[in-house]
Length: 351
Ligand code: R7I
Ligand code: MG
Ligand code: MG
Image (cartoon, rainbow, N blue to C red):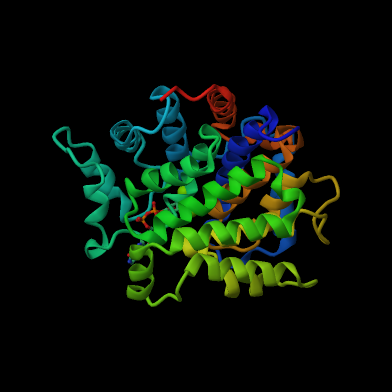
């Protein structure tokens, strides 16, 4: 489909659910434990029609993405009170979805009816600096679907992440993920080098910020940490043979946004072409998810973010029906994506 076409919207949210559900199976494993043949055998099992009752449950990644999408739709834009309440309610109803250890405290505080500053609980995390986890980034895709204007995508993905992640290394990861989906929706992955160049220049702007600089210093990161990682993505892309070990050591596979968002972007770029060892029958989204699983670590979230970016590029038609049938919440994600497509293409209100 063309730029911002319906099939790209549907591919985004369905790709994210697939990554979360399928990646959940390998979460927290060491890469040595999941050689490619084990990943492929597992993925083959998803196509087995006799496993009719196979349902892979989604985790917090999808639960919170649904809250974001739903809130943006019902409020016809970003409403921090509504989104915060939606997170809190979702957590109360289904606390078993595998939330990060720290964010649970924020979600409990957000449920308090007398709370006036909904950003306050996030600011109290980790000794007052806030979380740098990838929980803001894992749910950022709907911001790219709801808003057409790049400045809005940046502004609202940041605020949406700050409801739980007040450290710039957390919310800037969400901005990066939203921007990657935003560009992919426009078809920007047709020119991968330009895609990266745009991301780097956008993130240079984002990371100029005073609190980004002081957080990076306080956490002993280099200046412009996301830009630095994106430069590494570029270097890895330019090489012919990149091992899983190198990807992990250069980019990470962990629960911090800094150690997972650039990794997810790399997975998408690396899998734009067929890759040795990955079946020819795979479409682009399947290839991307299969590749990212091999990294181990925070597989549900890395596959979820890579799945969203890849899904925005290849579109829903490229995604295996069998995989979709196996994943809890794939149909609901599809419906939300269609509604967000309408919102995206509606004229903005005057004034
Ligand atoms: O970021 P968050 O919502 O977790 C998301 C992850 C995804 O992988 C999901 O799939 C789910 O498995 O969890 O939750 P947080 O609790 O804010 O952050 C996640 C973890 O990162 C924390 O439990 C800490 O271990 C670590 N972390 C920090 N550690 C020290 N100092 C995050 N921020 C800090 C910090 O500032
Ligand atoms: Mg999860
Ligand atoms: Mg995870």
